Image 1 (cartoon, rainbow, N blue to C red):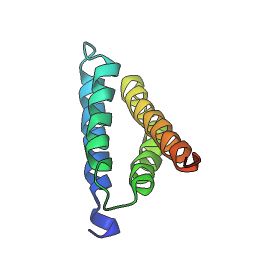
Image 2: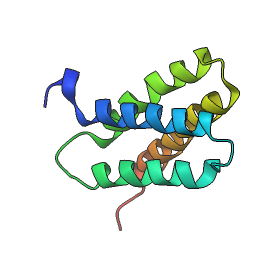
Image 3: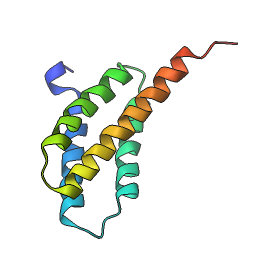
Image 4: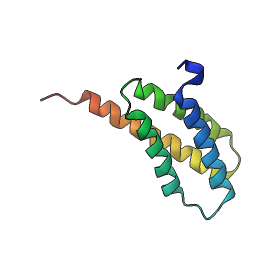
Length: 102
C-alpha cells in the first residue's frame, strides 16, 4: 500500500466516525468505545509486515490536531482519548524494544 492509502487512513476514518457517534449520543461511555478502537489497532499491529510505530503515529498525529480544533466537547474528548491511548501504546512498544534480551 502506498503512503496515501495505508491502513492508517481507514483507522483515522474509523476514529472520526466513532467520535461523531460519541458526540451525538450522551449515553455512550468513553471507555468501551475507546477499547473497541484500540482492539482494532491491535488487530492491525498483529501483522508483522509493516512499521507498527509509524502506523500508530500516522493515526495519532492527525487525530491530535483534529482534537485541538474540534469545538464539540465530547468529540474532542474522544479524539484526545484515542490520541493518548495510541501514545501509550507507542510508548509500550518503544519500551519493549529497549528491554535487554536474556
